[in-house]
Length: 417
Figure (tube, rainbow, N blue to C red):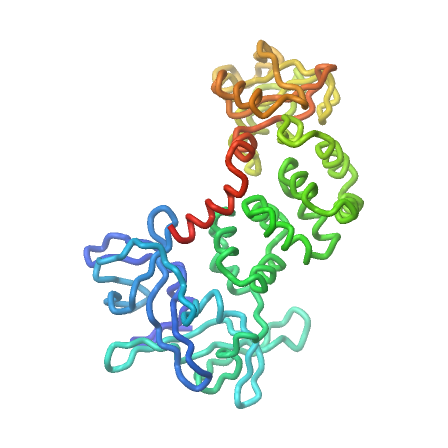
């Protein structure tokens, strides 16, 4: 849909940069705040939700927006950096109106995929147009689209209308998992569960790791059990084990029974360790190589995009088998050491093993002390037979050192300052 003077469709401007009069970027548009009064009256656009430096979201009144021509958003340059807090009478156009199931007075039924606003003679902006897509009559075919006047649409002023999440997710595609977790806490529980249901398995796993435990359980509880098991399998081992440990034993066992056998075996082993020990915090999937692997192979492994930086900081060299629990643990090869030697060098020739590594039963304090003493961001966990059973990263340790509920408090600070 094209943007014409005086008429702007939201899909054209959401996600676009916001500039001050000098052309300097202020932030990025994330949503519009509107006042939905009744089905027959056009909602007035009160202002913009702008994401500024540090991913803080602030409110920019429409009175401070000087131009929307061509989708370019220009302000007066005066921006209140106080965090945006939605009031009870306010509606977020993208988060709450997109994906509504609506009908028209001409018997058109479908899903809202865009909204159009226009300015009146006094300079006030109103939502005036609703873009609706009918359901496809054939599998894989998109339905007919219609642009309707707001006054002809039934369902947008109804807070109980059925809402999906597909179009809303498009506005969240580029968010970090932590930011998306914060956004999920801002919406209603019903909306949160709808969005979670639409996320891909890997994306949902990443987001669950950033959410408070009670919200993790809430989301996992409404997923199909088979899908819930798949999502758990995509999570980091220690996070998945913590989540399983917070579920009723019968529910946890059902999840384990649906997981891949190797994942379930790892989970069962992690669940045997006492809370606050190295075993309860570790991942069972660090980068493990045989001693005859080359540095070129090691560098290829640590470049894998799914690895968190802490796990990519070193490789763990072991005799076969190289899946945890491994054969005899020979030592670690730090990333810096890998970069200092020729690619053809064998990793077995550059290992370090001069530290008394923690055992699964080692305490949180012991693990934290080792990380601090040797300036490490990760370290191996070995058993009494000197086999590698896992690795603990610094973020795992911080997770346990910070006060209970720190994650929820952190997200709350991000949302409200």
